Image 1 (cartoon, rainbow, N blue to C red):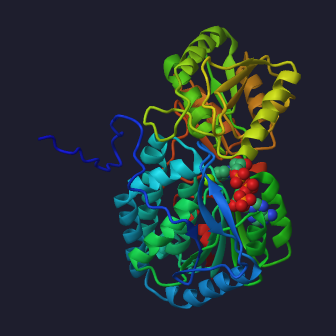
Image 2 (spheres, protein in one colour; image 1 turned 180 degrees about the vertical axis):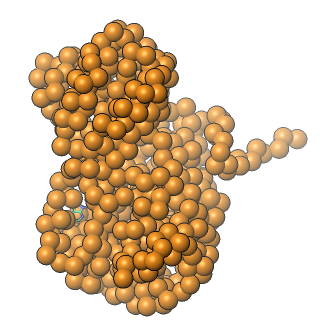
Length: 489
Ligand code: NAP
Ligand code: MG
């Protein structure tokens, strides 16, 4: 008799490769999702719903409520009411709820991961190994801080802000929600959160989990809708803080909308990171880092290493190895555990990426894409690189948010520092070198919130993440991520 193999969820180990694809038979999606307000799913007063689709198949997964002004008023009211009790709970009690959420998410990690892959197109391997375990780790981490706020901010008498409006993007739907909700709750705030329109399903699943965790009604309210709904949240007079992750363009609109009010804000915005390969770098490791830097999550990553700088003396070697590696990347069904590059999140985003690829060609850059067919249905883009790129080219200066790499060369340290910092963004950077002194010199010179050395796209709840310049302000993660959710006497 054969025994069915159990899949264990272990944060510290990689998942085993199993026969593909992942079954969706056990995933129960509702046909229609309402708004989660005051601890209940309620029909939108607007009466409107929109469709969320699977970008791999272009099929409709579910209909989701579109919150209008009346709905936002109700959600904010419910959060305000809940804040009275929630903020009075001891940190230890709040922590218990947050720990419970973390544990439940861990138990249901598989379901969350599959929904994430279905709704957003990301490879199941990434959703299971990275997104969901990290989301749960954020709840664990901030649960631990809930009763230690006085210790974290000694002699400053930390107090919650009140009602927080949180708006998240579609690239790491569950993870960005965790980055927002966990510190807000630990600090004693209540929340109205809006996930992005193309990927609302894991946030709505999380609402079900909140009910199971017994989280008091109204402490977190989840409203769905388009950008218009987000704007209503931002402009609501009874909101104390706006926590936004998304594009720099929308970030600027939000900052204008709250100018002159007492609302606080944190802005996690776009990026155009430099990933720098020195001649003394461990080259094979660096090539893996380049691939991870730009093709992880289809390049839909704010801190993606989208500008690659290679020192001239190793240019030919790196390019040969990089092209070989790209030829082996599996592009296709996100539910297949062998897939490296999944579907582009939406038709709209695919059009943006295609426009940039065309502009790269029109500006005289040289394009390389690996051979192979893309699936006929769904939204796809081959891993793409451009050489013969100038600093002024659009593909080298604007955020593409897709699997497209712009490659330049350099000779000296001073030259690469100048080139790397020549951007309005300042979110992240990567340095590859075997020489410690060079690494330390470079990390201090990069105008970026996060600098990785001999690795890339590594995240941990204990370490703060955030940008400089047009990449935003405020930090998420670490004790620094608690501060923007508190006021001090
Ligand atoms: P986006 O278009 O700016 O949207 C982000 C969120 O804002 C979505 O929920 C969106 O709703 C909502 N929104 C749109 N217009 C709004 C308005 N006028 N007022 C209030 N909310 C509004 O960004 P995206 O395309 O979803 O995400 C990609 C961007 O996010 C990239 O630029 C990326 O770099 C950035 N990002 C930054 C970080 C970071 O930590 N720094 C992390 C991840 C992503 P709809 O989706 O329903 O329109
Ligand atoms: Mg979708």
